Length: 460
Image (tube, rainbow, N blue to C red):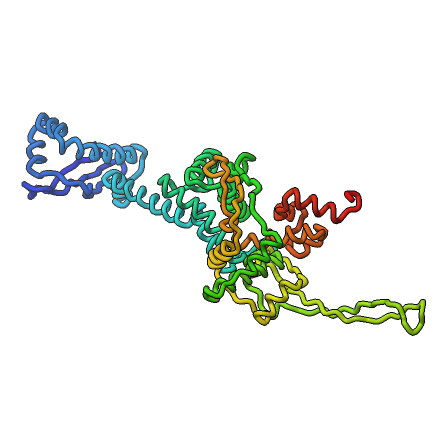
């Protein structure tokens, strides 16, 4: 045997190092090294007293573990010698350490692998990380729209509210979803969760739409490699909402309400809302009108009339007309619209010297409902809603349905009923297609009949 194990002669008790002597006369090798293993000196000496005692020691609990390593060291060393390798101390040390510290090295390797995995995971862009980054960037302006504009405050707010439901869903399920997890099973679970919360179809659709928008951006930037969310069934369903609009008579009632018993807020909310009606803009635009947004156009209009000094002849004269209009850069789309100021609008603007006050949207919503209630807009309106996936009809007093967006719908509808061409209305509202505009026009069938009868001789 080329390998012999021993302990130092002076060691009689306690745990002591085990040494190995590697010899080969043929290869001129004689190396002595510590194996890095320890043994009970008393048991070792007792075992070496006879072959039987040695065999019993190998079978003992401590012996099995010790000799499993010693035998492996011996096999590896002798394999080198048989291969004709004149083992040096350094080579022998490496072979011994590979066996003695195999578990420690494996544990270290796994620890390093786990550390590397965690580090890579911390650097990897996950869906939740991307959503957080996306929301921060659209809020601070470092990420812009496809048109190169900052996201409007109201758009940022709406996106955050929709994506917040995804976070709530994860909290309830106790699972963090990543890009690869967004498939049809997720879609069914998520939409079912939103319906259980009583969300209407359009609200569920909004949550799905905003999540898909994030997935699309993440894909375009190389983070999202999954395409499971592109299934045609993975979509945000939307239905037309039976939103209301206010008639000219109802607007007159609102304007004639005595608000003297209230503070300035109610009157300001009403006036801001009416500016929204006569401009047909979103609240983010009509609630921020400033003096510098106005301009005046001077137009020469030629008139002809009978000339009293020359019977049978006409005389011409020129009238200069001033047209006041508002220039608005719409925050949501970036579109620029110019809106002539009609008499009702000018009266409100002059009241504030063309510098409209600003109120929070929630304040306007609260106050305009109170004003409309005082104006007697208490007739019940049948509204069909779909909450939790179940359609149902409700009768709700009209004033309760009025909010900031009612102004825009009202303005678009009144222009339509006045016979203004759809394409001209689009120039005011900023809609890009008649289809989109028509969703805002809420005239009922009798009003349309009246409009047609007044406009076309065919019906006369």
